[in-house]
Length: 302
Image 1 (tube, rainbow, N blue to C red):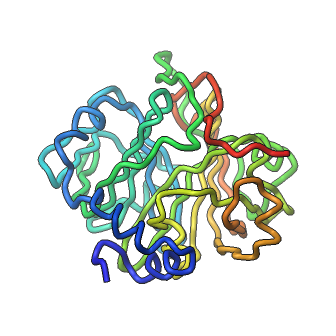
Image 2: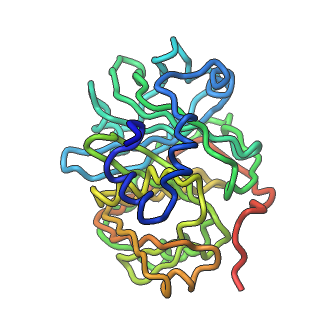
């Protein structure tokens, strides 16, 4: 058994038939921050994070800062010089020894890097002691030109807390081409990943149920491996133009039914998500992005 993977990842790899490929690609997973990643990390203004609250619910969040707000202290240590707003679930989830997953992503170059580890808190930020660090391929990332709004903007404001989606939120999700998915495994820890496709790739079945395709990836199944043994998951949909955020927490299930998957072009399986909590925030982030073009890897809808 390859020690890089936990039991859930191995189980999904076996069912999907990617076991040998996963063993081969496992060499890209480091326990340290390799020197080739340092400049990339320190030159990015955003990071996506996954965390788990006291009830075991998973959440995905975003933090922003001026270039250099993320600093690589040494090969095992990443310093993040900012803290989330008190309205964000991440605020209460950041405590010493908490497991977090980080995704550093550049929408203009399609480059992304995942770092998973545990937290050491501080007065004006926090430190992550890394356990896993690895790059992902550029597939399904839509091109955007992004920057931080330099004008003074209002503080984040929660405009809705609910247990289901109203009509406007359902519309927003149907138009989305990107979201982020947080998951957690008792052994593997916390993880956050990117999901992308043409608008409509996330379907709203009803006010509490979403479904989306799982496209071909690296065969590691880090996220699905977590979900297979712990269904708690969190979703983050960003308003790239206005800085708002839609955060969902609930449970996810892998659907292996090939007939259902065939309804989604390019899907190898689908994921069904049941919503338990909804948080809508205005001015969640100073990030502002202009859409450029869709990823050439997005499967076409017929």
